[in-house]
Amino acid sequence: MQSVPSRRHVIADDIRNTISTGQIKAGECLPSEAQLASRYAVSTATLRSALSVLQGEGLVEKIHGKGNFVRYPLRRITYIGGACTPRTEPSFGSALRVSVRTTILRADSQLAGLLGVSSRSPLTEFFCLSHEGKSPHSLARIYVPCDLSPTGIPVESHCCKSIEAKLAELRPPLAEVRERVCARPPTQEEAATLRISPALAVLAITRVAADVTGRMVEAALLVLPGDRADAFFTTHHIANERTSGR
Figure 1 (tube, rainbow, N blue to C red):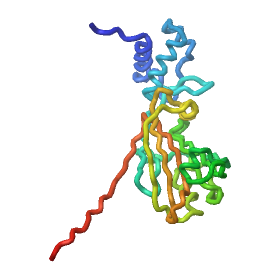
Figure 2: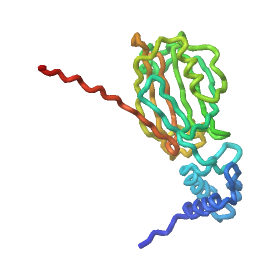
Figure 3: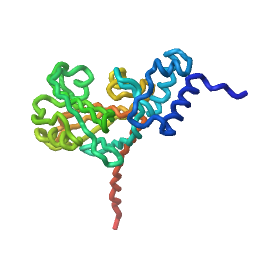
Figure 4: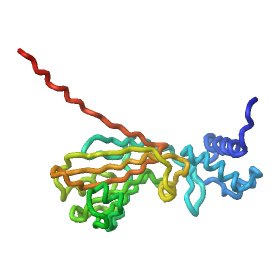
C-alpha cells in the first residue's frame, strides 16, 4: 500500500517547485511564515516543519529577524588535509570574504589538552567566518599561545592565506599537523551563525600543529556544513629500499 505524503512534504514540494520554476529567485525572500501558513491552511508549526525540509536541502536559509530566503547555488568547500598548511578553499576558485575577530581568553580543559598547556593559560583566539556573497560559508576558531600571537591580523580578508602567513611569522617551521575529522550535528550557535538547519550534519575538523621543537603551537576547530563540504587527504608511501646480497 502506497503511503500518503505528509502535509509538510506536500508543502515543501510546492515551495520547491515555485523556486525551481523561477517564480521566486535566488536571494529573494519567501512570503512570511504567517502568510504561507494561511495559504496552505496549516499551523505555523507545520509550515516551519516544511521549511526545515528545504533548509536541510540547502535550498532555503532563515535569517533571524528578516525571514526565509532562497539560497544561491552552493559552492563546494574542498578541505585539503595532510600538509603543514591545510586550508579550506571553494572548489570553483572564487575568493571568499573572511572576517576575523580576535579575542584573548584562558584555556579551558579541551584547549589545554590540545595545546599541551596548563588550564587557564592565556591564548589568542581568531574567530574566522567566511562568506560567499552575503551567505556564511564556513567557520574556524584558531587558537595560539599569546607569545606566538601576531599583530596586524586583518579584520577582513579575501582569502585565508594572508591569515596563515601572519600566524607563521612568530613560530618556527611546522613539523607535524594532526587532524581529526568527524560528522556531527551543529551546535545551536553554529547553526545560527552558518544559517543552516540544526538537522544538517557538519564536518568538524580538529587540527593541531607542532613546530620543529615539538611544541604545540596551534589548535584549530573548523566547522564545514555537510551540504557543501568535501575533505581530501593524500598519503605518500615511501617504498623501503630492499637490501640484496649482491
